[in-house]
Structure formats: C-alpha cells, structure tokens
Length: 202
Picture 1 (tube, rainbow, N blue to C red):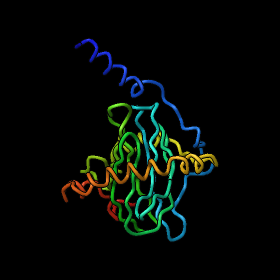
Picture 2 (cartoon, one colour):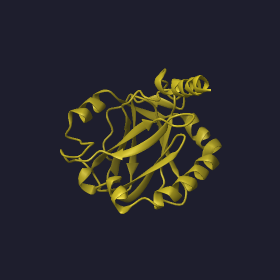
Picture 3 (cartoon, rainbow, N blue to C red):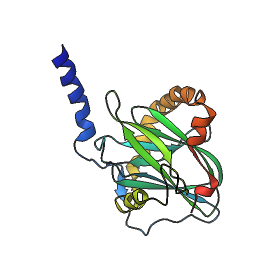
Picture 4 (cartoon, rainbow, N blue to C red):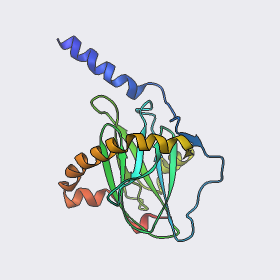
C-alpha cells in the first residue's frame, strides 16, 4: 500500500515538473513592450517559474459581478492588461481560484506574480503583488525581479481565446464563487499582504 501511495504521488507530480507548454490560445507579442494607455493603468501578470509548466493559468479582472478574461499565462510568459484606475479584484484560475486586491493610479505600470504550487491533480496558482519596496518579499527593486523581466516574454490573446473563455465561463464563475467564500474569511492581515498598493506602480 505504501508503494502504491508513493507511485500515485509521483504520477501526480509529473505534469508539474515535466515539459513547459505555451497555450495555443495565446501568441507571442511582436510589438514593443506595452505602456499604460491614456488615463489607464497597466497591470502585468508574469509567470517566470517553469514549475507546473504543462498547466496553464488563466487570469481575470473579477472586480464586477462577472469576469473580464485577461488571458492565459504559461510558464516564462507575461500578459499585460489596460485597467481603469481605482480598485480592482484580480483572479487566477488553475485547480483552484486565487485573488489579489489592487488600487491603481493612472499612467503607472503594476506587476503581479503568477506563482504555481502543488495541487491534488494539477498545479494550483497564487497571485502575489510585487511591491515597490526593497524590503518586500517580492520587490521591483530586487535581482529576482530583474531576472523575471528578462526571463519572460509578452503574449497576447489569439481570436480563439475568447471562444475558449465562452466555453469555460460557467466553470470559471463556479470556481470563483467557491473560492471567494474562502477569500472572504481570510484575515485583514492576509488581505493586506495580498494587495497591490497605488505606490507599487512605476
């Protein structure tokens, strides 16, 4: 029985440590690096880790009652989103759903880390703010951030991406509702840690 448990655990881990796959619904951007549009804030979701590279993470603006589909973030890619200034709730979907708060100033660029971790059947994901604070765990001023920037490239949604989202919108909404209940029970300290601050923009 012990050997069987170990075998199952190893098989479950294979997709997390195996090949890196880029989503068929995203294409590599050939344009210059994006900048904030007039009166907008630019939010960049970046996934520099190869861990769980065979599993895709889809990201959303979940501020309103519905979800705005931002894109799919594969390993070593990043996705840019032109957002209205003000308060937002962003969401990532994998095996789970996870959230991060944000308050955005116009004309600034903000960065959020899409961080994979072990799930039951496939990778789970967290959204982690990258702060403009040298003392922060995830900092814009760190060597890690410079490596993440250099090691990731921008991708954009292909026309097929919206079709994919429409086909999965009900599942996304169901997962959002389930994990939102857990998010609401997190402590003020936990939510403060998972908040992009206006001053984090550059």
